[in-house]
Amino acid sequence: VMDKDNNINKTVAAGSIKLNAKDENGVVSGTALILSNAQGTGDGKFVQTSDGKKVGNLKLSGAASSATLNGAGAIGNIDGNAAGEGSLLIGSAAYGKPSAVEVQGAIGSSAAVSKIEVAADSSLTVNAAEGKGNITAYELNLKAGSTLDATGHDVTIGNSTDKVANIAGGTLNAKTLTLSGTGEHKIAGGANVVVDILNGTDKGTINVGEDVENGTASVMAGQLVLNKATMNIDPVYGDQYASVIANTLSTDSGDSLDGLVNVGHNALFAVGFD
Image 1 (cartoon, rainbow, N blue to C red):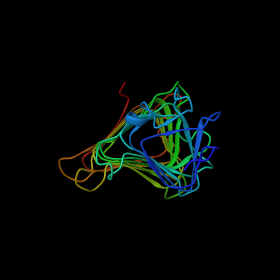
Image 2 (image 1 turned 90 degrees about the horizontal axis):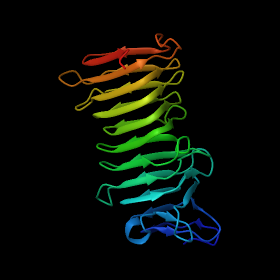
Image 3 (image 1 turned 180 degrees about the horizontal axis):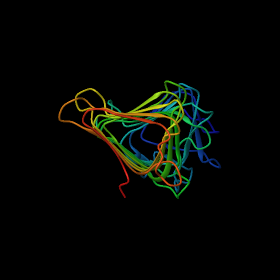
Image 4 (image 1 turned 30 degrees about the vertical axis):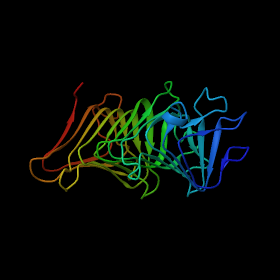
Protein backbone atom coordinates (compact mmCIF):
# COMPACT_ATOMS: atom_id res chain seq x y z
CA VAL A 1 0.00 0.00 0.00
CA MET A 2 3.03 2.30 0.40
CA ASP A 3 5.89 2.21 -2.11
CA LYS A 4 9.59 2.64 -1.34
CA ASP A 5 9.24 6.42 -1.76
CA ASN A 6 6.45 6.52 0.86
CA ASN A 7 3.69 7.21 -1.66
CA ILE A 8 0.22 5.97 -0.70
CA ASN A 9 -1.92 5.55 -3.82
CA LYS A 10 -4.68 3.29 -2.51
CA THR A 11 -7.05 3.67 0.42
CA VAL A 12 -5.39 2.55 3.64
CA ALA A 13 -7.07 1.85 6.99
CA ALA A 14 -4.53 0.94 9.67
CA GLY A 15 -3.48 1.65 13.22
CA SER A 16 -0.43 3.69 12.17
CA ILE A 17 2.23 3.72 9.47
CA LYS A 18 6.03 3.54 9.53
CA LEU A 19 7.89 5.34 6.77
CA ASN A 20 10.68 3.85 4.73
CA ALA A 21 14.30 4.77 5.43
CA LYS A 22 15.88 8.13 4.59
CA ASP A 23 12.59 9.99 4.41
CA GLU A 24 10.42 11.63 7.05
CA ASN A 25 7.51 12.39 4.70
CA GLY A 26 4.62 10.21 3.60
CA VAL A 27 2.57 11.31 0.56
CA VAL A 28 -1.16 10.55 0.31
CA SER A 29 -1.95 10.78 -3.40
CA GLY A 30 -5.61 11.21 -4.32
CA THR A 31 -6.90 8.70 -1.80
CA ALA A 32 -7.86 8.25 1.85
CA LEU A 33 -5.54 7.38 4.73
CA ILE A 34 -7.34 6.35 7.93
CA LEU A 35 -5.24 5.74 11.05
CA SER A 36 -6.99 4.63 14.22
CA ASN A 37 -4.58 3.02 16.70
CA ALA A 38 -1.42 5.04 17.19
CA GLN A 39 -1.14 3.93 20.79
CA GLY A 40 -1.39 0.24 20.00
CA THR A 41 0.71 0.01 16.83
CA GLY A 42 2.83 3.15 16.60
CA ASP A 43 4.09 3.84 20.12
CA GLY A 44 1.77 6.85 20.24
CA LYS A 45 2.65 8.04 16.72
CA PHE A 46 0.19 8.00 13.83
CA VAL A 47 3.13 8.33 11.44
CA GLN A 48 6.65 7.39 12.52
CA THR A 49 10.07 7.47 10.92
CA SER A 50 11.72 4.21 9.89
CA ASP A 51 13.61 3.91 13.18
CA GLY A 52 10.45 4.64 15.19
CA LYS A 53 12.16 7.43 17.13
CA LYS A 54 10.34 10.44 15.70
CA VAL A 55 6.96 11.41 14.34
CA GLY A 56 6.74 11.46 10.56
CA ASN A 57 5.18 14.09 8.32
CA LEU A 58 2.36 13.85 5.78
CA LYS A 59 1.81 15.56 2.47
CA LEU A 60 -1.68 15.50 0.93
CA SER A 61 -1.57 15.46 -2.87
CA GLY A 62 -4.69 16.09 -4.94
CA ALA A 63 -8.14 17.40 -4.12
CA ALA A 64 -9.43 13.94 -3.18
CA SER A 65 -6.65 13.14 -0.71
CA SER A 66 -7.46 12.96 2.99
CA ALA A 67 -5.99 11.87 6.29
CA THR A 68 -8.34 10.79 9.09
CA LEU A 69 -6.74 10.45 12.52
CA ASN A 70 -8.81 8.59 15.10
CA GLY A 71 -7.99 8.09 18.76
CA ALA A 72 -5.01 9.56 20.60
CA GLY A 73 -1.60 10.09 19.07
CA ALA A 74 0.96 12.44 17.54
CA ILE A 75 2.07 13.38 14.03
CA GLY A 76 4.55 15.80 12.44
CA ASN A 77 3.99 18.47 9.79
CA ILE A 78 0.97 18.16 7.52
CA ASP A 79 0.94 20.02 4.19
CA GLY A 80 -0.85 20.15 0.90
CA ASN A 81 1.24 19.13 -2.07
CA ALA A 82 -0.06 22.35 -3.62
CA ALA A 83 -2.17 25.08 -2.07
CA GLY A 84 -5.70 23.91 -1.33
CA GLU A 85 -5.07 20.18 -1.63
CA GLY A 86 -6.13 17.57 0.90
CA SER A 87 -8.33 17.31 3.98
CA LEU A 88 -7.30 16.63 7.57
CA LEU A 89 -10.03 15.01 9.64
CA ILE A 90 -9.63 14.66 13.41
CA GLY A 91 -11.98 11.94 14.64
CA SER A 92 -14.95 10.53 12.76
CA ALA A 93 -18.50 9.31 13.28
CA ALA A 94 -17.41 5.84 12.20
CA TYR A 95 -14.80 5.71 14.97
CA GLY A 96 -17.48 6.61 17.49
CA LYS A 97 -15.24 7.99 20.24
CA PRO A 98 -13.51 11.33 20.87
CA SER A 99 -10.04 11.70 19.38
CA ALA A 100 -7.07 13.70 20.67
CA VAL A 101 -4.39 14.48 18.10
CA GLU A 102 -1.14 16.33 18.77
CA VAL A 103 0.63 17.93 15.83
CA GLN A 104 4.33 18.34 16.56
CA GLY A 105 4.80 20.85 13.77
CA ALA A 106 2.76 23.01 11.40
CA ILE A 107 -0.26 22.45 9.17
CA GLY A 108 -0.22 24.00 5.72
CA SER A 109 3.09 25.74 6.23
CA SER A 110 4.53 25.07 2.78
CA ALA A 111 1.11 24.76 1.08
CA ALA A 112 -2.31 25.28 2.66
CA VAL A 113 -4.52 22.24 3.10
CA SER A 114 -8.04 22.40 1.74
CA LYS A 115 -9.89 21.59 4.96
CA ILE A 116 -9.43 20.84 8.63
CA GLU A 117 -12.34 19.28 10.48
CA VAL A 118 -12.40 18.39 14.17
CA ALA A 119 -15.22 16.02 15.13
CA ALA A 120 -17.50 16.54 18.11
CA ASP A 121 -15.71 16.32 21.48
CA SER A 122 -12.36 15.75 19.76
CA SER A 123 -9.24 17.88 19.94
CA LEU A 124 -6.38 19.08 17.75
CA THR A 125 -3.42 20.47 19.70
CA VAL A 126 -0.29 22.06 18.27
CA ASN A 127 2.86 21.27 20.22
CA ALA A 128 5.73 23.06 18.49
CA ALA A 129 8.28 25.79 19.07
CA GLU A 130 6.98 29.31 18.66
CA GLY A 131 6.59 30.15 14.99
CA LYS A 132 6.92 26.49 13.98
CA GLY A 133 3.30 25.45 14.52
CA ASN A 134 1.26 27.79 12.33
CA ILE A 135 -1.90 26.56 10.61
CA THR A 136 -3.11 27.53 7.13
CA ALA A 137 -6.24 26.01 5.60
CA TYR A 138 -8.96 27.09 3.21
CA GLU A 139 -11.74 25.71 5.44
CA LEU A 140 -12.09 24.97 9.15
CA ASN A 141 -14.97 23.06 10.72
CA LEU A 142 -15.06 22.77 14.52
CA LYS A 143 -17.94 20.64 15.73
CA ALA A 144 -19.75 20.86 19.10
CA GLY A 145 -17.42 20.29 22.02
CA SER A 146 -14.30 20.18 19.86
CA THR A 147 -11.05 22.05 20.49
CA LEU A 148 -8.36 23.58 18.33
CA ASP A 149 -5.51 24.61 20.62
CA ALA A 150 -2.88 26.54 18.67
CA THR A 151 -1.77 28.70 21.60
CA GLY A 152 1.28 30.73 20.58
CA HIS A 153 0.76 30.09 16.88
CA ASP A 154 -0.95 31.77 13.90
CA VAL A 155 -4.10 30.32 12.33
CA THR A 156 -5.19 31.49 8.86
CA ILE A 157 -8.47 30.29 7.38
CA GLY A 158 -10.31 31.16 4.18
CA ASN A 159 -10.07 31.50 0.43
CA SER A 160 -12.53 33.10 -2.02
CA THR A 161 -16.25 33.27 -1.18
CA ASP A 162 -17.06 29.72 -0.11
CA LYS A 163 -13.94 28.56 1.75
CA VAL A 164 -14.48 29.76 5.29
CA ALA A 165 -14.28 28.99 8.99
CA ASN A 166 -17.30 27.34 10.58
CA ILE A 167 -16.66 27.29 14.32
CA ALA A 168 -19.90 25.64 15.38
CA GLY A 169 -19.71 25.05 19.12
CA GLY A 170 -15.99 24.40 19.46
CA THR A 171 -13.19 26.22 21.25
CA LEU A 172 -10.27 27.87 19.45
CA ASN A 173 -7.16 29.31 21.08
CA ALA A 174 -4.39 30.92 19.03
CA LYS A 175 -1.88 33.75 18.88
CA THR A 176 -3.57 35.20 15.82
CA LEU A 177 -6.67 34.15 13.91
CA THR A 178 -6.90 35.55 10.39
CA LEU A 179 -10.20 35.02 8.58
CA SER A 180 -9.39 35.52 4.90
CA GLY A 181 -11.33 35.72 1.67
CA THR A 182 -14.64 37.38 0.87
CA GLY A 183 -16.94 34.72 2.30
CA GLU A 184 -18.95 34.60 5.54
CA HIS A 185 -17.08 33.08 8.45
CA LYS A 186 -19.25 31.81 11.31
CA ILE A 187 -18.61 31.58 15.05
CA ALA A 188 -21.71 30.20 16.75
CA GLY A 189 -23.22 27.16 18.46
CA GLY A 190 -21.82 28.13 21.86
CA ALA A 191 -18.31 28.57 20.43
CA ASN A 192 -15.48 30.22 22.34
CA VAL A 193 -12.59 31.95 20.56
CA VAL A 194 -9.66 33.40 22.50
CA VAL A 195 -6.83 35.01 20.51
CA ASP A 196 -4.19 37.69 20.87
CA ILE A 197 -5.17 39.21 17.51
CA LEU A 198 -8.27 38.67 15.35
CA ASN A 199 -7.77 39.77 11.74
CA GLY A 200 -10.49 40.25 9.16
CA THR A 201 -10.11 40.82 5.42
CA ASP A 202 -11.45 43.51 3.11
CA LYS A 203 -14.93 42.54 1.81
CA GLY A 204 -15.07 39.55 4.16
CA THR A 205 -17.73 38.91 6.81
CA ILE A 206 -17.41 37.52 10.34
CA ASN A 207 -20.70 36.39 11.91
CA VAL A 208 -20.62 35.93 15.67
CA GLY A 209 -23.80 34.23 16.86
CA GLU A 210 -26.58 32.80 14.75
CA ASP A 211 -30.37 33.12 14.64
CA VAL A 212 -30.98 29.51 15.70
CA GLU A 213 -31.31 27.68 18.99
CA ASN A 214 -27.97 27.73 20.82
CA GLY A 215 -26.74 30.42 18.47
CA THR A 216 -24.45 31.91 21.11
CA ALA A 217 -20.75 32.65 20.83
CA SER A 218 -17.97 34.40 22.71
CA VAL A 219 -14.89 36.04 21.17
CA MET A 220 -12.09 37.56 23.23
CA ALA A 221 -9.24 39.26 21.39
CA GLY A 222 -6.30 41.29 22.59
CA GLN A 223 -6.58 43.28 19.38
CA LEU A 224 -9.31 43.44 16.71
CA VAL A 225 -8.09 44.31 13.21
CA LEU A 226 -11.00 44.15 10.77
CA ASN A 227 -9.14 45.46 7.68
CA LYS A 228 -12.48 46.78 6.31
CA ALA A 229 -14.33 43.54 7.01
CA THR A 230 -17.89 43.47 8.38
CA MET A 231 -18.60 41.84 11.74
CA ASN A 232 -22.17 40.89 12.68
CA ILE A 233 -22.80 40.07 16.35
CA ASP A 234 -26.34 38.74 16.30
CA PRO A 235 -27.58 35.62 18.13
CA VAL A 236 -31.15 34.36 18.28
CA TYR A 237 -33.48 36.75 20.10
CA GLY A 238 -34.23 35.62 23.65
CA ASP A 239 -32.15 34.68 26.67
CA GLN A 240 -29.04 33.74 24.76
CA TYR A 241 -26.28 36.19 23.87
CA ALA A 242 -23.16 36.68 21.76
CA SER A 243 -20.19 38.85 22.65
CA VAL A 244 -16.99 40.24 21.16
CA ILE A 245 -14.56 41.81 23.62
CA ALA A 246 -11.32 43.39 22.45
CA ASN A 247 -8.65 45.17 24.45
CA THR A 248 -7.57 47.42 21.56
CA LEU A 249 -8.45 48.11 17.95
CA SER A 250 -6.27 48.19 14.87
CA THR A 251 -4.38 51.46 15.05
CA ASP A 252 -1.27 52.18 17.10
CA SER A 253 -3.42 54.10 19.56
CA GLY A 254 -5.88 51.23 19.57
CA ASP A 255 -8.94 53.47 19.36
CA SER A 256 -10.05 53.34 15.69
CA LEU A 257 -12.30 50.72 14.15
CA ASP A 258 -11.22 49.89 10.58
CA GLY A 259 -14.39 48.11 9.53
CA LEU A 260 -18.10 47.78 10.28
CA VAL A 261 -19.56 46.14 13.38
CA ASN A 262 -23.32 45.46 13.53
CA VAL A 263 -24.58 44.68 17.04
CA GLY A 264 -27.98 43.00 17.26
CA HIS A 265 -30.30 41.97 20.07
CA ASN A 266 -28.70 40.13 23.03
CA ALA A 267 -25.27 41.10 21.73
CA LEU A 268 -22.26 42.84 23.24
CA PHE A 269 -19.34 44.61 21.58
CA ALA A 270 -16.84 46.01 24.08
CA VAL A 271 -13.42 47.61 23.67
CA GLY A 272 -10.84 48.50 26.30
CA PHE A 273 -10.80 45.52 28.64
CA ASP A 274 -7.35 44.34 29.65
